[in-house]
Image 1 (spheres, rainbow, N blue to C red):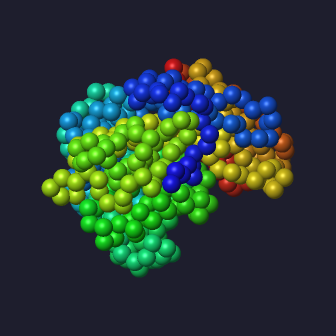
Image 2 (cartoon, rainbow, N blue to C red):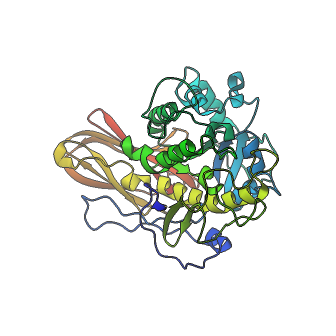
Image 3 (cartoon, rainbow, N blue to C red):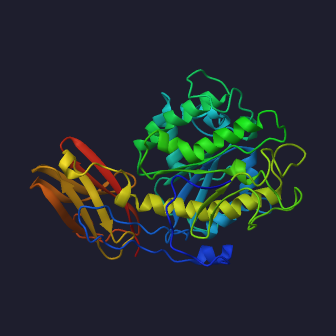
Length: 421
């Protein structure tokens, strides 16, 4: 079956024979302004790399280390070529050795536990390597903007039934896995300044629980965000499991670029999620269930363009980050930001349901106030204000991601924008 990911929308058409190398060299296309000020801006999606260096941290264990490694999965090198400064966590990392615990039930300790503020502070500040891969771009400074996290292959042995509903009962089951990921959305929703990328657990060679693993990962890609009504664009899923369930004939030959097989990729103008072109078990076995280099390289080839796509969706989130009610329903909203990314200036449009005190300010991704653009009583209706990429004293701020925050009626909405100098 070929599925279009629930978070994908039609993309600008690109030649079917465009090579992976060419994809990495595509320039960013920005969204035009909307003619109707009461409608969200339409964003043009792109799998091109970010135009400035973005900090990313990958939470993983041994399979992730192989995927990152030069000469194995080559993910670290590929991410560097795409303008990501990559750091990672591994066994023994972090407060209380939290890096040892990356099974699905453990994500509650990372993102929803009593120590979450301490863990996140350490994670956001981390800039070291905890396994071997080449980094070719400089550290741009600041916190990690993207958090990528993955459980290892034992987490594909999910017990229960494929259709089980979410369950708070702790265990490696389909029901509890759904419960965990639903809970994580509470943290992700509170942090629109970061992009969270879920990597599904790789498959096992043992078929005993393969149908459950397949069903759960389809749920993650196709249903998780929709069933929770999650409309922010700071959460994405890459189906690592699915990519590793078909090969090019044997474990040392992959089917990257093939029209057949199982894939999760950007192809022919859309996100393609093909899940019935292979089996439900590991197609790249080694001496155990760690994927072979061929499998990891297929995953790299399909993941990196999707990561770029996820990044641009998140960066453009100010246009359609949350499907807010129209002003007639008594809700304020950020209508759109255009151009985005921008240089030298951009226009931020917002709407108020009634007149009253409003504040619109620009922050960096670390939460530092850059400039207040609006602070006073504003009339009902649509408004717009221009930001010229300068701080409160008129100094140009550097290239990077910034947050527009609208406060009105005791509520706040945040949208992301990118400055490219």
